[in-house]
Image (cartoon, rainbow, N blue to C red; front, side):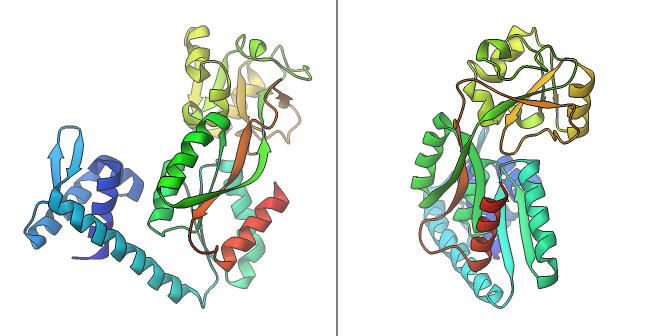
Amino acid sequence: MDLKQLQYFVVSVESGSFKKAAEMLYTTQPHISKSIKALETELDVQILERKARGVEVTEAGKKIYEYACNMLVDAAKIHAVEEEEERVLHVASAAGDRFAALVGSYCEMRLEEGLKVWYQDSTVEELFQALHHHTIDAGFFYADQRRMTSYLQMIERKHLKFIAICQTEPFLYVGPKNPLYHAKIVTERDLRTLQYVQSQNAYVMPEMHLMEGGMDSLYYQNQGQIVVTNNRSLLTHMLRTTALANVSSGLFPDILTGQGDIHAIPIQGMKDSITFGYVKRLRGDLPEEAVKFVEYVKKHL
């Protein structure tokens, strides 16, 4: 038995499937399944029941799950003691590429000080899991009011705490060929007249849920004429050369507007509609390096 097996087991229980656990832990589904099967053989007890749509913890597995969680937490505390003599930053975010660029700038500034950084992009739910398992110290994300209510309920259940840093709003990004290129402000009615190019995660981005019906509504109203991509260069190219538009956060937009030919236009009625901040464990203070990074983020938003 090793800690990796216990981690695979705990995440499988919490996610409800080997597939989701593998995605969260950046490994393969067969590897997760094989590791847990080996654990069951060693313990001589079935801890997960395999079903068509996932896995379900057995009665014996529930007891082992509690012990495994405690062991993983204790192991994380031991590693934290080891790192006290080092400068180590453990953070993750669901705030996109622009936030990652901010992390990069911070790393560059602290490089000569010997700072070690562990950073990854995550979904909001993955941030909560990572904090629960002590693999990060702070997770950054932003959400609209409706989603924030749901997230705060999850945060409370997992004994975490959310600290708001600021509020922002979504913007409409358009290029020279868009009919709203010279507009000073747009309305939701204007948004429904456009066709869009969005980043691949647009379907779960909070700003899309601020519009009536979200992306699904835009998709059908425009007869399916929408481009979805995870390539920022393609996204930017489409804005500059076509009439397609993009909706992104004003805080960490998917689009870089520094070239001057892409305009960011405020959307009427959406001021301060998105909250940005970070989530941490309820008990205990942030480590010193995490505190320094939070202050850096506040100054450079």
